[in-house]
Image 1 (cartoon, helix red, strand yellow):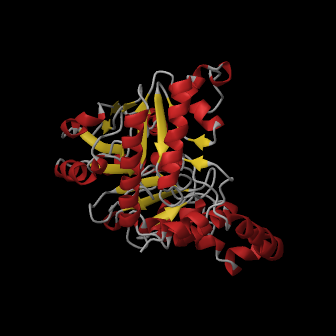
Image 2 (cartoon, helix red, strand yellow; image 1 turned 180 degrees about the vertical axis):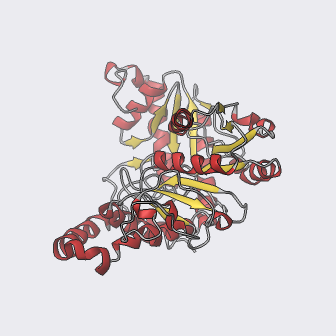
Image 3 (cartoon, one colour; image 1 turned 135 degrees about the horizontal axis):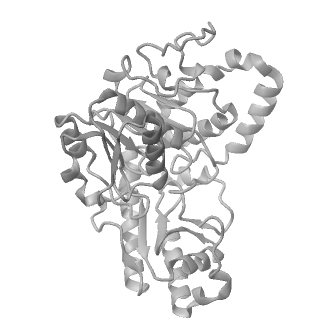
Length: 398
């Protein structure tokens, strides 16, 4: 059973801060500093090149991948970590395109995170074979899955609104019509229960710096269905995915039958040290319990905001089963209001054009945080503090 008071104590949040932005960047675990110190002093400094063997650096892509995989319903040996999420988008979609070479339509939606769409646009230009990217409204995706579609690439939880696609229904229809499915789980892993294995998805990708608390720029992950591990063709063929990486052959041969074939280049072992201690916390958490607590806290937040903060309109789904673990409200002065809230030490974020976004992350957020955050938001709105000039200027990162 998940002990949320215990998990709360594992994070090193600044005194007095209410952090409602774990959906964008998770806070630092207390164990991060000793973990990095140990890596520097007891691994890199003392082992040097020997660490690839003595500290098993070479296979941390897989051992950490299995730990992440547990959180998304992936069987052991089907997930690896490394590279960035953008690279994993490119890698998974390219592999999917190769599986259905006679189809030229890639389907996403216009609520997808833009970098996913950008990577597909670049891939289509590289292939230069008449591909089309279709991006209907998220609500229209099911109707848009037709026999023309080769690859369906969706983010399960919408980064702005928190709207959640029906993963099982999408996969079943896509497979029935012969399409390959790629899921971006950036706002799902650590937020909602996911069952990539049970739903028989083809590929899943995601990052570890949001709900999983791996740190800024923490490595991404990729999952491949077991039935594809011996046939999927890596479009990005780096030495780390070679069948015999230390034979130094001049021709590429992917690792047969194993998830290693989806590794690309040398990963950041320093970032793995940070991810590992974050996953130590997750190893003691039950995703169903985390999700249930997230719903409880989110419902409280919505009730309080709607009762006390006129002018804010809920843009997340009303039904908690239809959303992820962040809640979004639209407000005409959303950017300035969020800056005023941040100045009051309540950290959320803003997404254009007018969305105030709040991550509800039970590992370190409790009921008292929710009430205190709404108290401060209510006061800012009553005093119209968001009109102050200091809150009108847009920062480089919003």
